[in-house]
Length: 531
Image: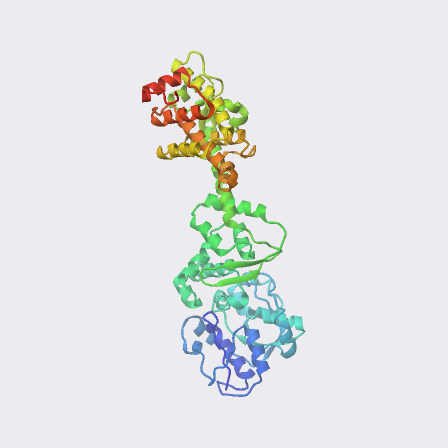
């Protein structure tokens, strides 16, 4: 019974190269059965990296029954039973890796029995007619290795002076050779993509034609090519195993060149020493290899999120700068440090108020994470403003003290539930009109959070509030959102305002100012806080 190599989809096109060696190794020629030892079979399989199962009766490989494409071109090569001196063979200048392959697994077998599978070579003159730019790289050699660079390197390392060879011309593109042996060569996703790109640019092949020639799907080819649209730093990270293919493709899918460029710069900054074994997820198969140059895995998705947030902050700052210049206002990056607690009473919303403040050179423009900045008065409201506005601001100041007292007061569950019900039924959003800023301020006053977190960081921390503090934090948030609703000069007073003042009365004994009382009387015609 004869063991016959089984060729995978990527390797079967090279069967004409293997058949002469298989015949000599297994003791037969032209497919005639012969005798061979199991050790020889195993060594042959290891050197070709193809499985050699027990198949019974020898049969003609499927690749021999396939015509056209690379198979036909390779079959036209000239076979030879002779051997070449390794010193006469130049390494392929087109080797996509540009670095020495690992040969540890081949050296023992080649030291013992020599190279069993012929090296595919091209006469140097033929090579230079097609690639004259490689003259220096192949100088002094008679042949150029087209395939079998690892075996050739292992032969040199083992002290072998000669290797078997097979000659072929340069009519078959070397990119196809490498892609057919991608598994043995262990091409990285980027190297594979570069070979696809070369076939498209130099040979005029379509993605579908490449897929047919190499035995992969057209979608696989398309996805690999998309990797080449990324910045070089990200390609290098994919090439070395620091970044997975799926992560890189998600960045491509964003179709945001500025984001990709920023992520690439952030990636360069994040790479430090360290080594790790990285699994690269692929759309067609699982690829695993050890990251090169001491690389470590990098969470590209996390970098994308960080860069996206940083870009939003930059965009908000840029918009605020432009708006400040347009209105001749003052740009302020930290309103908390500039105004302190007064910022709650100095914020303005109406366009008429913003223009009036700008005309008085009393306008502060503060960036947000959007292209719409916030506006504040630098100084307190002037005495010649309307009585209604002055009274409203004064009421806010008075109520602010009550708010802080309420925030530190431990209230029963029923009161918290009432506040939350009021909040929910009226559809108020935590994110509306800066409600979270005030909530954070109140939470700090109640020692429920740390100083210096900032609004955005604090909001993200709410999902991890300790169980014993959840009710108090909910109470503070409800107070803040209700208060922001009351402060909205454009919002008509209604039942929610009445309920809010009732809460303040029940918790801290707050008594509305005359202006607030007038608004409540006009709204509800009642005084719910009185006994």
